[in-house]
Image: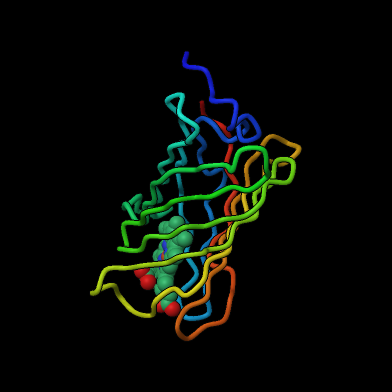
Length: 162
Ligand code: HEM
């Protein structure tokens, strides 16, 4: 198979497909807590870029809910990582942060949305990906909106499926 661009070697642990292990948990002060399942795919075509697709579904009804796709880049020779993301809700974002071992700490740097995006609007996003010692991947997303300070929205653990 195609060789991974050496710039991305520090992120090789992300590559492949991941399935939520137990349903993810969604919460926020203004919404009803919910459970979801999610598939993540991280791939590459030899460029210094990882391509990704996330698809989330309602845990009980399996109805499609949230989707994100985008690209991951690293600043060569540093531990700086950027996620370039499009969401099906009409939001686009740049998140940047640092890779420490097998943990990524990301903060939104730019957010933009369609003129008719539903309110409240997201004002800030913080995201952590961590590969745990037991081989599971964990993602936590916090957000701030027009009317809520930064607070957890999502927490989910995945197992590798390929
Ligand atoms: C609600 C943003 C990912 C499911 C919301 C709200 C916002 C939001 C702004 C409305 C909060 C309010 O009314 O005060 C985001 C962002 C995400 C994200 C920025 C990614 C970075 C997800 C994912 C799921 C999800 C992966 C998985 C299914 C929901 C549900 C609600 C909700 C079920 C409540 C009902 C609704 O408003 O549609 N989200 N979300 N979200 N989100 Fe997310």
